[in-house]
Amino acid sequence: MLDELLGRAELKERIEELEDENHHLQRQLEAESERRSDAVSDKQAAEERVNRLEDRITELEDRVDQQDATTEVDREPRRTESLRGDRLDQVLSRLESVTTGPEGALSAAVTDADAGLPDAVTAAAGDCAQVVRGAAPTIYYTDDAGLVSVGLRPPIMPEAFTEWAGSFRLDREWFQPTGRLVFAVVRADVCAVGVYEDGDRTAFEGFESTVKSDHSKGGFSQDRFERIRDEQIDEHLDESADLIESQIDGADPDRVILTGEQAVVGELAELADHTASTDAGGDPEDAIEHGFTDFWTTRLVGI
Image 1 (tube, one colour):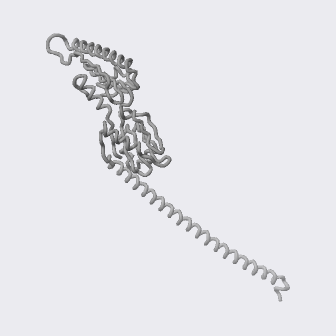
Image 2 (spheres, rainbow, N blue to C red):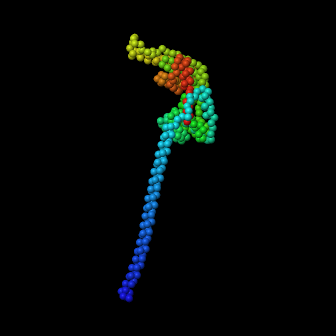
């Protein structure tokens, strides 16, 4: 009665209402805190799982890299062979006979392995890419079914190229003495020059020069001996150049190939389309037969 008279009853009711509302808000706050705590725990658990998965991926990638490195080191050519004459012709004919669907045959001239393999070669060769690098300079032939995988190092290496087509890119001029050519072997004391039609010799000229090879203990000094020898070699090279030029003028060849001692070949290189060193010895006739066979040899590497 007194509370009603003093107006406290209404205040007490308001207090009770506020206490109930405060209790409700506290329950909401506790529930929200629990939800946030659960969210933080879920986030932490997810982050831990992501970290474990990333560590596992890194571990597996390292294992794959190690296996690839080991595989590359252990890979060796399936076989190697020196091809010439009829055997070379048979191998080239087989490669020429291969036909695939569009862009099913890869031909790639790898001229400089230090510069890295073309992406197409690396992908096609797979774990045998190291073998291709080791065979360079080479022309790598393979198909999308993996039935063919071989590297050929021809006597005349073309410029670098990579080509997917329906058949292999193969030019006989890289491998065989097609057409008319002048072929010469020059040593410090021997010059041999032949004219060839599709590999058959139709003309030949050669000569030997007297060039001092040993210095006797008496007579004249070492310096004078070397000067005389150099003069004899220079004279021999001048005569060799004259003979080669005369054969070129008379034959009007498709190509001129010069082989012989490396230092000597360098002096006459401007006369030729292609040069190579050879250890062909003997008289001019023997030298040109040996040098011709040596030059027109293709190295096969099974990959």
